[in-house]
Length: 449
Image (cartoon, rainbow, N blue to C red; front, side, top):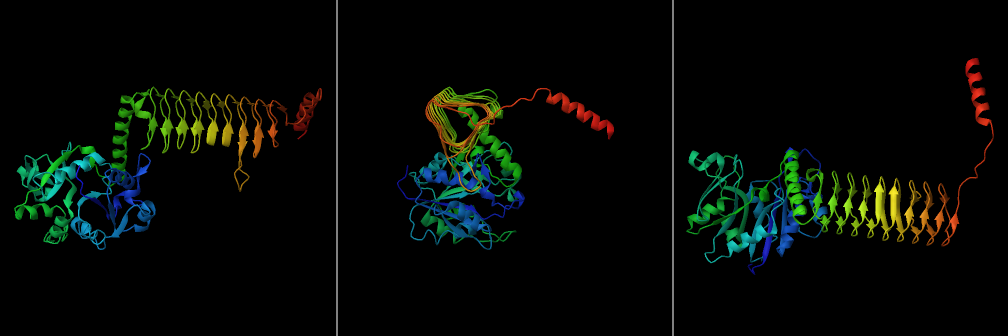
């Protein structure tokens, strides 16, 4: 890898009108992360010293997302891709290194591919520009690259190409790597003598060639440079990403019973010998240990599941859920910001929020922790080996001691000592014959009416 400093210029000034959205196009998510987030993560992965995002409308949305992680500049008016890159020049004043030119709506370019571009730029023959090419299944209206042994002889837009040039299968992704000193000098010479009166970035390749300097092309897989301009394309890129991630999960030792129904997030972590049944959804921040079984229709986000635990079916683990080794979260159980200790069980129809549940404790069906009073959240602590009877309500803040038993149907509002039995329910009374008399009275009343 080159030791030259690296800057990334990310073009995101397009209006995104085909998305028909109030959300900036590059902030639409793929695998639970905004498109721009994917790209910035890859740029961070190669150690970029500077990042500049060029926007048009929607600057405030992009600034909120990147925070201080990148500089934001505005292209106004929008006069083409070459003009867009020029807007980053002031932000990179004094920068002397390699510049990657990327697109915010081409989000999945791997760090490894960016590295290959930079290595080619710094190869012995020192090309003026490195262009990332690809060979799509259908070349459609992409610009074509005519190259011999990776050296570019001509780049041409589809509309300007001859039939022979349109037959070329190597297409231009638009992504480039250029030395900063070369980039600004070449851009200054780009003209706008074309039908759209715009300044086109690819023109720098032919300008360099006219100076006697060659440019190079390296190839990427089509999925690496897939662009998103519509909701349909967003869905397609998401689907392609999910297919690759499922294949990787299985290659890494997870069993997916119905792979096409499992939905991963960009940062999902799976251990070895995990079994995932159909229709499981992982949101951001999910980590699953070895030998875990996740039953069908479970929803896991921001949660940690320790080895040999069992989840679902129809379980929901919300952010802050921490499920201990060999613990069980059963059907229609929701866990939020709560720790279940080793071997603890919540098997049916329960809500456990803002709580700690000790090792070996059992949470009966229908139990809820009442953690919110409309203003503040409070914690419930359930000790090791405690048994909470079915249909109990634990009104936080409350502590259930180790080995304590809470009788079914109780509403617990005070702490329960270790090994104690807590009953907090009305006394059952029985009135012999009352039901028969009631029915007779109501039948008579109905006939009289």
